[in-house]
Length: 253
Image: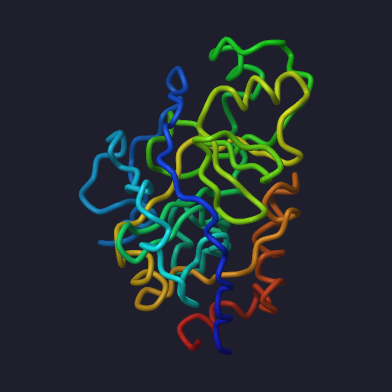
C-alpha cells in the first residue's frame, strides 16, 4: 500500500518564536527517547535543555520546501518500530518542516499526568484560579520538557506567533494563557510541555529507512479532541490502515 503524499500547507508567515519557561518542580524528563542505537524525536548530539535547540524559523518562507515531501501541518503516526520507546502509539503534529532546518512537532495524544493545568497556571501566577476555561495539557515530547507551547486555532494570534497554516498557529507567550484562563483566546487550543525535533534529513531517514512513522492529514478532532487514547487508531483510520495489520504494512509502502 503506497504511503499517501502529504498535502502542502501554505506558509503564510514564518517568524522567530520565544518559548515561555515553565517553573515546574521536579517534573522534567531528561532522557532522550532511544531504541537501540537510534534516537527518535531528538536532534542528534544536542542536550535536551539546550535553549538553542529550536531551529531558525526566522528564515524566509521560501527556504521551506514547497513539495509533496513537506510535512508541515500533517500528523506523524508512530509505527511498531517505536513500540519499545516513549513514542509508542504517539501522534505528532508537525509544526514546521524544512529541508534545511529540520522539523519540530508536538505529541498530541499523551496526557500530562502532572502537573495539572490549574497547578501549572498557579506556578506561572496566572489568574483567575481555577481558570474559567480548561484546555488539554499534553506531554509534547522529550526535548526541553519544562518549556510550554500552545498549539491553537488561527482565529487568535500574536505578532510573534508561528503561523503553521491557515488553520493552526503555535504561540509561546504567557499572554495566550492569560486569555485562556479568563475564558477568552482562540477557539481551540492545547498546551504541550516539551517538543520533538529533528535535524535536517533526520525525520526523512526515520520515515524512509527506519519505518518509524506514517503520516496522515490533521483534523481538529485529532489535534484538540479529549479522547487521547483513541487518537492513534483514528489517525491510522484516516489513511485506511487497520492497526492490527500495521506491522505487515510498514516497510512495504
